[in-house]
Image (tube, rainbow, N blue to C red; front, side, top):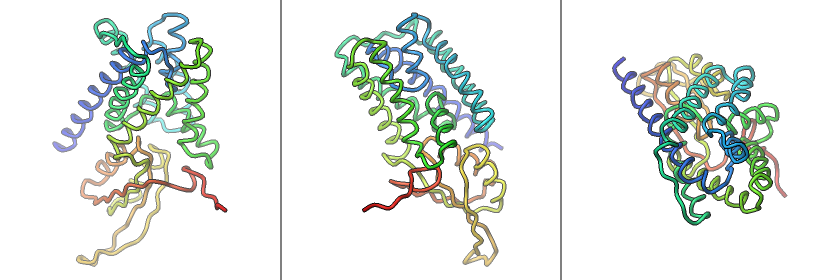
Length: 288
């Protein structure tokens, strides 16, 4: 129990720091750069440019219909945790960060680059806390679920690409999309570097006495699947079960929590992968 509370406390600290950094990056760099780097925050920045309504409030409003879809078509746990994170993130941005945090006034390219780096750090910490900021993540998961042959990366690129194209007309210049790409690229690279050291997916091999419980939560909470293999301990000669599961970068912290909560005595080996092919990831097809 003490270990579980310690882990939850660590997650809360990661979430609080991640939200603060994410909001600072949005307010201090991305907003003055006049770019919309995809997702719900990108849509909110576009509407803010036209109406001057608070960005946090607009981000929450943009996420509401997506969260409703996530509730019905993805995981209710995912929808609830994402809704809480989004609400806190929006409130902190409008109430705490925007009134006191100075903005960067300088080169637009550097502004976009710094924004991507800072936001990437914030999002990585939020992912490590076991939740997400919603937005394009939800849409990407929904698209990938409707078209399983479509990789999640391609789905996210499609969603964010639409926002980038619209930003050209809202801000009135092609540079808005080009600098938005800079922000999006930097953000993605920073997230990958912090969580995986640049890799995109991880395969977990778990030795556990509760494979069914873990597999059920992987399916329900992560919308992933798993493979169960019968095995035998070389020393104990006791029968056991191996659970194999591959998840995306933002899901790995939640997978570790699921395994720990179900079986604290489980043994897990995580293998970083540079490419995952097949159902739910990149399409498996022959070349040549």
